[in-house]
Length: 428
Image (cartoon, rainbow, N blue to C red; front, side, top):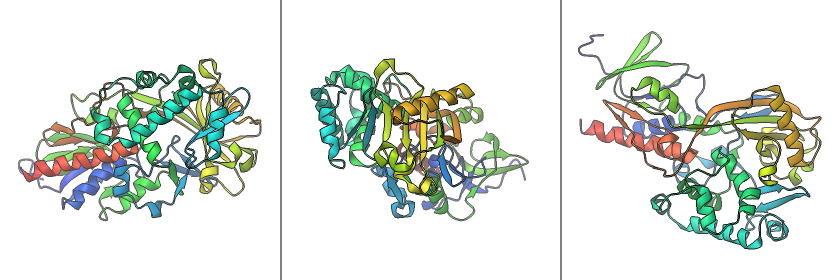
């Protein structure tokens, strides 16, 4: 190849076949741009992955998909995903018993339990319900445009008392934000509450990896190349993308890797702080109907700041999605904030799961465990929901760290980055 006049092999190279990269490729190819997606792993998905072990489907970290995501409804074929719904709400484990606090529109029995439960005052529970419903009536632009503060400050300003916050709201949202102190932006919290009111959290019947696989399958054949690691990027139009013993020359490159990897390819990029999580999967010794009343609902610890045990939540995932476990078998997913990689951590997680589910876990079998150090970008207030995607010199960046740390954010980021590339190349 002549280094002075390199031959353009593709209009755009996308590095990373996670949701953001695949969403970018979808928009780029739809606009008629020749696109190559390079993925270092053997399969697509990035952080959205599923392993199959002895008939159990194990997502890499407990993840849910909300069909109310506007971007998701644009790009996914929902019937093809065969979404399996969870119960809208949470089961709060208190010293005396477990209480179901859920959307009464879908779980009528939850209304009476919400009234009777010793989890915050009735006035506080009513205020929180109205707070969430008010977010549902706001547009996304209105939510993003409001003055920002921490999630905790927003809840207290809405006169929601600390007892309800500590017993239910904090442990529930900690599993969403992957941080325990509710220092996350109220803009992001309000977007999350808005989506919860509008849609039912679900998982595809074949596991969360069905999402990226569906996106990849819709791209022109040969677009995605797996097991290809990028080592360097040079040039600024054309851009050279180097892999092991090879290079691809393109008019532009979209870097859709994890944030830390972006910095290794582009000088001057500052990766955001990342929150970590550890998820255990156990085959329970009890039958499915003996756990959580036979329903797929998130169980959180409502004992407040004095609670013992590492878990942020636990759920009998196979009660919501029977395809996640062999027949008549219960698969339990339990998650803790942070990195928990020792055998002692495994014991502590199992003991805490026993407390949350109010059953003996001595006969539970560990099926899989995932320690995910960079699971989710942190979103402290004030949150800029639409971060810059242009890095200069034919380089662009995509990922949920450019929008919101969610599947919705990853998909929007991919499309938004691709649109920037299309506009710039058209004007070149």
